[in-house]
Image (tube, rainbow, N blue to C red):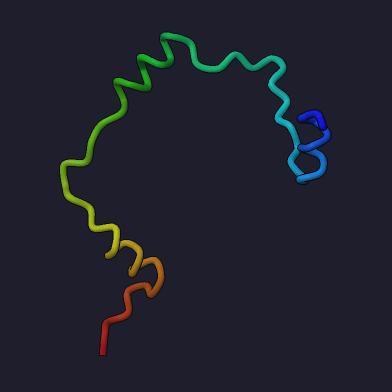
Length: 59
């Protein structure tokens, strides 16, 4: 079975990449210079609880 037939069976549509060049070296350098790190520690559990329950106070 070829990959196209397998993709059709799984319901996956191939991405049309014609005319797409991706990142150039200059764009990669800009992306690297814009990336940074968080200076404040983030508690992902608190974020998950906030997203799940909102700003409700515990009773």
